[in-house]
Amino acid sequence: MARKIIITCAVTGSVHTPSMSPYLPITPLQIADQAIEAAEAGAAVLHLHARNPEDGRPSFDPAVYRRFLPRIHAATDAVINITTGGSHTMTLDQRLAAAIDISAEMSSCNMGSMNFGFFPIAEKMKEFKYDWERPHLEGTRNAIFRNTFQDIEQVFERLGDVHGTRFEFECYDVGHLYNLKHFVDRGLVRGPIFLQFVLGILGGIGADPENLTYMKHVADKLFGDKYLWSVLGAGRSQMPLATQAALMGGNVRVGLEDSLAMSPGQLAKSNAEQVRKIRSILEALGFEIATPAEAREMLGLKGRDKVTLG
Image (cartoon, rainbow, N blue to C red; front, side, top):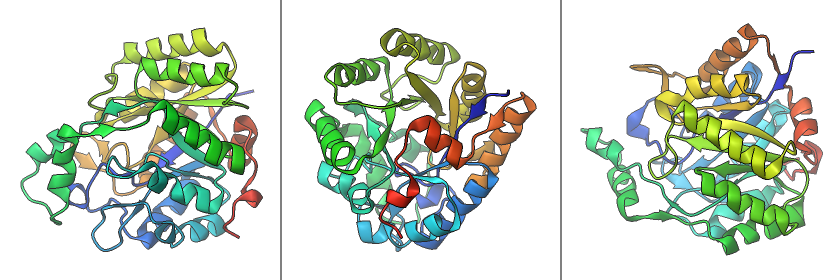
């Protein structure tokens, strides 16, 4: 039988700003429409952030999430994965608020503090639509994306223990894998481990093919065959690294959070375009695309009926 591959689609994120692409979903209706279309295209998991509907800045407000999550939940059976990364400007309580509010089936969990720099983007931009955008980008020059051991413990306790939420463990560098192993050894991580190797963020490991191979090598050493994994290749590395990951036994993540492009010099007009592109590559290579039900079984999730969006 052909191997099943989970496609995750990260719909909007908090890095890219409205001036960078007219296709970046900002309003609740845009986020819902693009998420549903991405699921119809083959994404089994939808990784979701919220934005202020007025100006597109990152939002942590559960009320904003509830303006698009019920619509997605009603229209598709895709796994709803709520960020706990949020934005570097948010407190941990703010970053956890939406996932706790809906008792999320799945959430991201960032496995270490780091410099997370996207200020170079501001140097390439001539004009901004909103006055918050340039300071948001420039602010990462002197900001730390905080994920201390205590912060991570709080994510496990307040989401994993209380709500039965499973995690997409986002690992931006090799040391983050060792951080996760620490929590596994302490018994704080249970059930299937789902690693998301993140390559190409300034401050983390570079988006080189050999780095993906090395991340996989270290994960094998630490976790044996007791984990699943995926890859997030930032920017132009999205499709090449996703293809490499599939050939190495992994799963894939695409979406406008990670890259605004469809090909060099061409903006993606929707998240679904990227999902359809990676799906066509995977199927041409002989792989099958996991359904949401299959993804839930692979990841050991509690089920969509246990999410408080009904």
